[in-house]
Amino acid sequence: MSAKKGFTLVEILVALFLSSLVISGLIGLWVSATNFATSSKQELLWRNQLSVGARKMQKDIIEAVSVSVSTGLNNTPNPIPCEKGGKAFLTIYKNYYPDLRACLVPVDPNSVVKKASKVFYCFIPDDSGKSGSIFREEGIFRCDQITEYNCVCDGKGDLIVKNVVPGTISIIALTGMANSFQIQLQGYLEVGKNNRPVTINYDKTFNSIGGQ
Image (cartoon, rainbow, N blue to C red; front, side, top):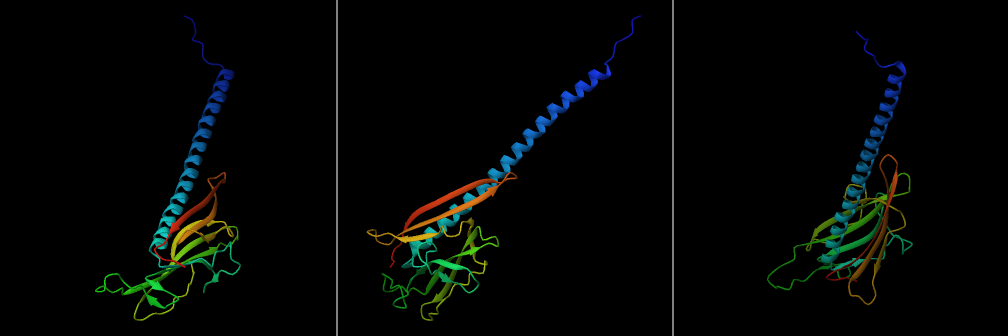
């Protein structure tokens, strides 16, 4: 009878070495795919947040009878300081004319506008100073008890979008276009474990039913 020949120690070591290379490659691919999926999810959530916030801003501007754009952070040296340290760059009045201190007169004489509101969009920088967040605040008051509402900007309002680059927010009243306002801002975010940079340049024009 002939003895069965087994694997030599060298063959076993070579097999283990090749197997480790294959496994390392598969692990590397899995880690890369996981990082890409994570970073893509972070980017998508951020873009969705900006999209939802922009729609809310658009809705406010469309419903406004008066829009103040004299507080743009980029095109005005003195934006409105709020009570808690943030700065308001957009002020919107609904159903209320601030110059007249009067509510909107309804078309139907039998109906009465009972409530009006003043909406602020304010910017709060983060601790690093490299980015910040935009918040929305709304003060609602009765037309027969008009009380001036000032922005607080304490970070407890509705969060519109995070990771906005300071100094890039601009609100422009377009000349030759009645009640049209151009909103510009830039967002910057590093996503994933590799800190992949993502930049968004937002530039939209909205129209209001009134304005000044």
